[in-house]
Length: 308
Image (tube, rainbow, N blue to C red):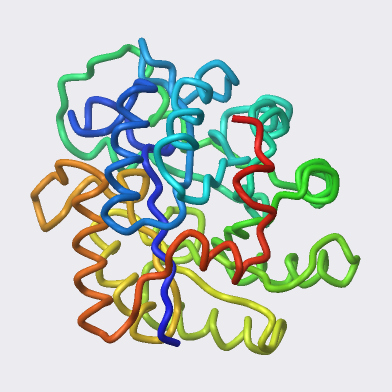
């Protein structure tokens, strides 16, 4: 229980630039904040890309290449590329950069789901870009597609053919059973790094009872063959990840998941959130794992195996 993995998700595809001036958008900003987060204690950096001009989520290899080489050169963190991209992208778009870069880790959403972001329209804003408000409004009719065929394609192309290991993102109980299905098919091997995701409308709510139930079912399905981590959206971030740390799990923070550092107070950087959760988990008696310790624990191929 002692060692703990801190993942930092730097920018994501949910928040828009008008929500916080501190959200990294350009390759230079993402690289700088990633380096700072790694220095603060993040062993894994979870990576999305954005168009540096519009701030819109992007799956273009050229935009990933705006920061991946710098992060590979200037940190020893495990680089974890998203295969989710944005829920409005096709699977081909979402996979273009990960297939080219062949990272040590990649995220993988374990099921198709509603992905409703429109509640974030609840306050007035001065929108910087004309795409932001319509993007959020239209999520009342958005389905984030992750079919069994899609999942198998990712597991084969990135996992079996390129040696990536996965952060299995489970937004609901059914996603654990889908993960068990692919383990039974022999497409993945333990240890399974499972990311429980709370607070996205369309997935499970950020209730402590949901976390304890997810752990109970994961124990039933995977016995000692898994590690769990927790992320929670918005104001639920720190309470839920602290609970996870106290229960022996691992944690994810970052501006992808929450823009704040305290109630009503924007975080100035990703590193600020990493520093806060590191102080919390160390007070709980947990020891933050180094990137190389994470590589050994998860059986990663090593940084030398990526195309950066």
